[in-house]
Length: 344
Image (tube, rainbow, N blue to C red):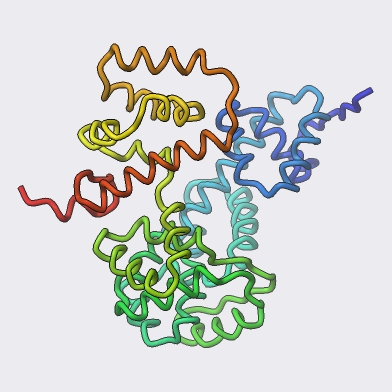
């Protein structure tokens, strides 16, 4: 018999896992699934078990949980915009003083656990001037802790040779000893801030490189990739596969999608669309004749079960076509800097 726990009427008696479970239960399934995907595997298992043991959730309790989640999210956004002091000022002006103090206490703990978070407040131009003469390994460590958009701006401003070296070091970075991060922070804090780091932090990796390069303009990306490819072609191929995934075809304009479809067999497209989002399916179907779209939909309907690996392989082959056409200048991907290469 499944054990069902009677819940209290106040949020103060709940632990973090219970709050998470109640929040997920209060959301639409799609939104709840999006949050679950961002949690570590062990946390997902723990929250799922808690969901299974929840009894009736009092409406008042659910509202308290949602309100706290909203306040913390709002506070974290304030920190990203202007730092902890900025967040404190806005929270005290918008919330009850007691609630504001509680929220500030919670986000202060979170901010202090994040290495190099004080650098997020510095303008990219000033930060670039500050770190550009550092050793590539030091720059790689710092860049790995920055938001990807800021990291991209820093990378773009470095000399080409240093860009390549920094990218290689980020891609090969696994776990960084907290003492090493501590030493780097101490070298910076006398000029920028005073932030300590106490836990082992996993940063870097090929995914980080891909996300940073995705935000660079095409010229910068191409220059870096060509430089890295001369020394490590396998790494370049791995980065490329992560930089643009099948769902990103949504960012290709209608003319570009029509060009891609000319090179894709219907059987391949049916297979690739098997797990695609409705938005992507609709975008692709809208760039086909109504008759062709109906045929694809019918083929998908009667396709039956297929292997995930086969779907992913078909999607990757289409992604490779998109990348080839983009490199040839035949299509433009929104947000990739290609618009800067157009002459009207």
